[in-house]
Length: 519
Image (tube, rainbow, N blue to C red):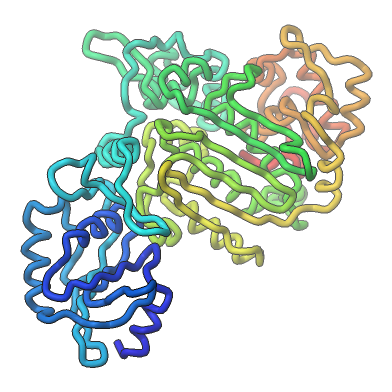
């Protein structure tokens, strides 16, 4: 490296990934704090032989670079730090303008090695990096790293104070119907609920024969009150922002007491609205008859949402937040990536924070097991000519955030912008017990043809999962009366969102409009 190149490197001073230290004759004590902070954050480079004066950096060199290198290797392999996260290729001597500089590139530690700490006390010796330098981690941060370092994921924990009957039975029934539709004839479909939950990882049978939910089972099928008893910071929040000076024009959150509040129901409640309005290019489906409205963009958006639910640290703070703007979607969840950003974007490496939840989702064809979700997201956006998605991590508290820009269909965006308040206020009012709908509400529903409501979304999702699904099966899956479901089907047909192919008996349903993006 030339002197000019080196001066350019240190021109901006210390950064998130760069630390400069004088180290004239020996490795300074605060070197190891930076070593810990880089290892626990996103890696970085430490330069020994660089002086800071009045916020300006200059090359002064070290007296004996070989000795410093020998001291470094002796100390790092001793008991000074808890883990070695550097290799031979990461440590070298650079000659710059006749002066010797020691360059040490600290790698981002594998989660199994975290927290990387200095000394004997993990809670006092663990550091991380921010824009201002190194800082000592809080107990909460250290505990999160310890939790992530375990071979068995946290969602496998058995909640022996709860019974299977404590789960939301309607949520479980809906999931089982979808499972049966997607995996017809599967041997698990014939099992009783307890045995089925054990098979999918939502429960575990103990040695005494009793069956109790796992943390994954509670998060996926529990009620919000029960989940928050175990996970006080648990919260799911989807917000649409279509008007200025209004906090949100629509919101679905786990604490509103109108639905279960668990992650499986949350995904299906927002899978359609989060994609609504995204531009759909004209494309004929494989049957050469219908229009293909489920684009790679739609699928990637749903994948981002699924990943947030699958990889969230449900012990962390602030919950999962999804904000949808006219041309932008932001998805953030507690917990940082368990692999480096570079590896995550390249794809091919899967390391789910919640392996049981991952399995529960994948059994109904949600979630990407190959670790290609982010890679496909970037590829799809590049092919569409959209702005490159932004993936970022933040600390204290730990969070991962994905920001994606989308192109929307103008008519749909205009129609949705006219709607203030909840979709139910402009579409229909359904009674909780009987699902009755008034004629006036039906007229309102026909006026808003671009915005299917929650019941429409569930019907569309189930039809996409099983085109041969019957009215009775839809009634059982959604929890509303058969006559009401019948009226909804007629409404969807009238609005040309779905159509019936063949006779009532022996025929099948077909989704023919973009509102029916597949799950």
